[in-house]
Image (tube, rainbow, N blue to C red; front, side, top):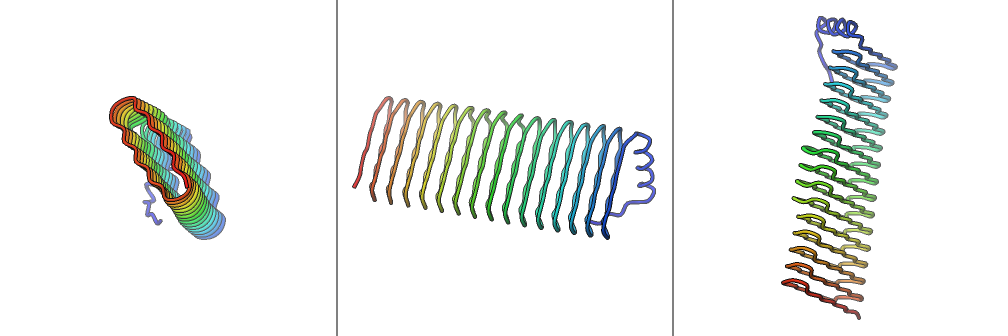
Length: 364
């Protein structure tokens, strides 16, 4: 990261900073470290500490009472901090080699904290608006995090421990949304979008290798999603679209399990728990006040639940191997229960209309 800055511009910016009571402290220990600090405005503060070789830091602050703290220890770490506005705070701490951090804050009262330990980790934080809070903690190698927060009061917390993990959080055109991503292991992937809504919350926890999670909360408010995947190569997709106060809970323990949840409407509840390997669950809720519960314990079980209407309730429990359950509810206030134990059972329930009740039990 080489920059050529004209001597005259450097001197001019220094004079401006002094005249407006800005403060800059640079401490470099080692060889070939580079630091550039540009401050315009009043009472801005920058602190840069570099210890090692060929570390590169660039800080630009324009406004009032912005604060930047950069600490780099190791070799060839890169940090860019750009703050435009008032009362923004950035804290970057990099230990290791070839870690890269970009923090871009435009607005008032935003806070960013980046902590990277290891090699070739990459963090990008962009905050546009008021009072956003972002925390990124990456430990390992080649982990990547992208956080984009727009409008007001959004919160993002990303923790990645291992190698080759990837997290993307987009919070835009909304207020007070909250995203928490924790990934432990290798090659896990998380993608969270919270768009055009307020007070949505997403929690993603992945522990293992090669797990994949996508959460989309769009055009709605007060939705909640929890995804917990423990094992390897599990896949979860949650989409809460065009509605308010929906709840989705997904837990997968084992390897190669797949869960898909679609909620469109208001106050729908979906719970999926899969214990074992290669189980598949697909839940679609369109309407208001529908409830679906899916429990699968074993291997190669498949459940499909489709609810269209209001106030429908479905419960599916499958224990064993190779079971298949399909529940379709179209109408209002229908009730279905399916329990299958043993191996290889098939159940199909279709309810068309209102206030129908069905119970299925199969075992061997």
